[in-house]
Length: 101
Image 1 (spheres, rainbow, N blue to C red):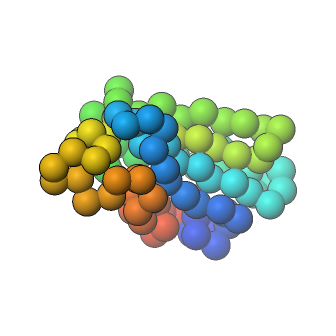
Image 2 (cartoon, helix red, strand yellow):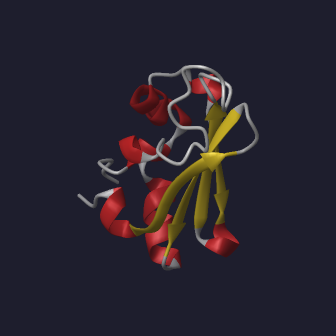
Image 3 (spheres, rainbow, N blue to C red):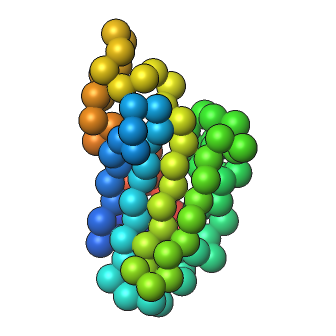
């Protein structure tokens, strides 16, 4: 099995405003993108268990022209609020690194 970490060119997270975290998965070519799109581990239902969230909170969008997948979900804590350990949302992608496709 291929690990997402080995297949994706970029795996990153960032704020999409103060209330939403966005994840970007970018792939080098169409074949690797197609492998990721076909993976049952990159569906909203599978990712919900990775992030311990309800599946209806996650949105997974495929961008074939860019060989990219965008995932978004609400932040648990508003960016910059007391208790927020990642104001920019840039450390939230780590659970994705060990996923297999």
